Amino acid sequence: MKELSTSYKAVLTTLRSATTVKAASNAVLLQFERSANQSAAVQDKRAGYGQTYYEKYAAKTAEKEESTVATKITTAAQLAERCLDVAQNYKTLYVMGCFGAPLTAANKKRYTTNHSYNKAAARVKMINAASEDTFGFDCVNLIKGILWGWCGDKSKTYGGAKYASNGVPDIGADRMITTCPDASASGWASMEPGEVVWTTGHIGIYIGEGLAVECTPKWKNCVQITAVGNIGSRAGYNTRTWKKHGHIPYVEYSGKVEAPAPDKKPASPGREVKATGVATKFDKALAGTYTVTASNGLNVRDAAGTNKGVLVSIPKGTKVQNYGYYTPMGGVNWLYVKFTYRNVTYTGFCSAAYLKK
Image (cartoon, rainbow, N blue to C red; front, side, top):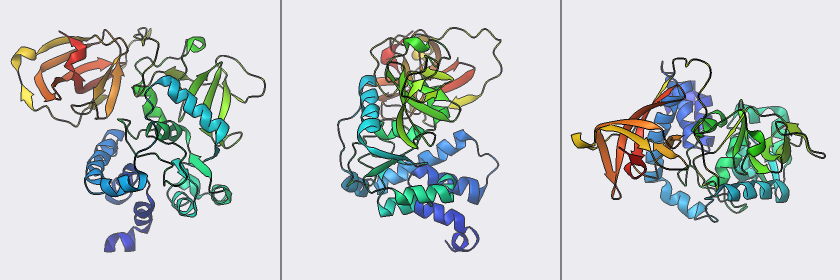
């Protein structure tokens, strides 16, 4: 503490004002320890350790404050409807790192000191000028906040959202598009409401009729409805052209998720993503090649169990390799598998109920 308060005051300020475990974890990793490996994978792994202790020691306090929220969003249609509801019926403001907090005096202080973007004089002025019934969001935190249970409750610190709940991890816009098993730069006219629309560093939700909901400092500086330029402009709406769209693995879609068409260009060497969880059992008889049978795709998770973070969602027909290692959980064997998908080699856990040998 002495070292932080004397030589690393900026880090200590971040730790005191951080609104997520990952923000605090990254402050220590990137600004205090400054280790050689500062990759996204290391950041996620470190934040995961912190989240474990947060849930162990702070969960009871958080549950008293945030209690249980409105109905959990389970379908893409509900997600699209809730995004539209926020855009049409709530006062909102673009606040970096904010996932639906009402802009009370305490929250204004928190968010004008926790992120460099928010510290800019113009942003501080906007945030401080907002009424207390205004809710702060940024692009990806609009989606995560809603999936974490945001319900517009002004009496709750985060509007009713519970951080990293409902099986939805704290990831950025560029990471979220990679969780889509069918992310595509074509097929815009056949999009399904509830799909994400993405461009570098920014993300929104398609709501149908050629429109999307996004939270951006551009145009109205809030959660707003815009036209999807890939489909066409719409009178009365600002237009954004996106790079990709796809189905995220955290809600159910009415349509079928199809395997993407093979890339025409030769595959380039990819990166590796490996689960932090460890298999607890071994059975040589289980070893072999398996095929995904789930019609809407299968989530590959960071550890055994449906409450664990999703590394990626893979489409029906994808082949994965198991070497006999697994973890039994809730009456189901979670196989520890390895496979390559879109030039990325993954090692993680899949439910054996949706795999055929």
